[in-house]
Amino acid sequence: MLDREGFRPNVGIILLNNKNQVFWGKRIRTHSWQFPQGGIKHGETPEQAMYRELHEEVGLTREHVRIVARTRDWLRYEVPDHYIRREARGHYKGQKQIWFLLQLLGHDSDLNLRATDHPEFDAWRWNEYWVPLEAVIEFKRGVYELALNELARFLPRQHPHNRFLRGGLRAPVRGEAAPRSPYGSVARSAHALDAAAQSEGTAPPEDEATTPR
Image 1 (cartoon, rainbow, N blue to C red):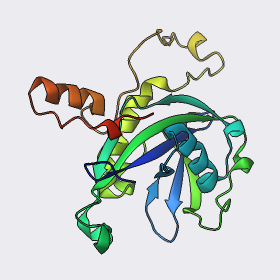
Image 2 (image 1 turned 180 degrees about the horizontal axis):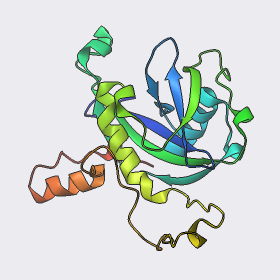
Image 3 (image 1 turned 30 degrees about the vertical axis):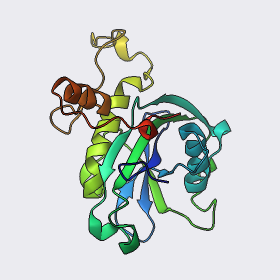
Image 4 (image 1 turned 180 degrees about the vertical axis):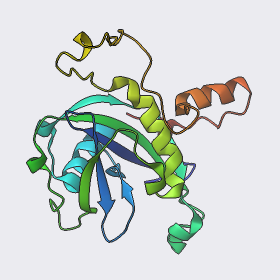
């Protein structure tokens, strides 16, 4: 299912534990690491697709997680031609994704990489929120940076015991800035980029298929 620009609707999942670490999966029989993701089937909403992919790829159900936030708009990446099947070249361009930030309510033991007969990962670990982008396949790195930056301000606040009663440390102020990205200059969201393009008269054409349901 492609939109008129050749992008396949897709969801990405950033799964947090109670330390705000993220699930980091190693793609089966490779050395690359990534977040869970998958295509949206015909008739599915992004949220329905997210729950299905969550179960298929890591074995969790909706009872195991809480939705913290999601990206406001689609984030897109193009796939290089040599990764595209020959019969799809000229039609398929890449993925457009809605990203979800989830809080794990269950336990590590609830995770199951063999929930289906076609596993995506053969290993996993908890990683700090700002994942090393060099571990991500190159053409996805820009979208990872956009998603992590946009969702960082929704990270649940941590409450270490007595942390702010010792040494005069300042408690966080309500509404303070999101954690700073270590990737360099803070990336702008897809929504901000589109708004800037419109103001400069260079926005992409309107496409109803790019509006999530």
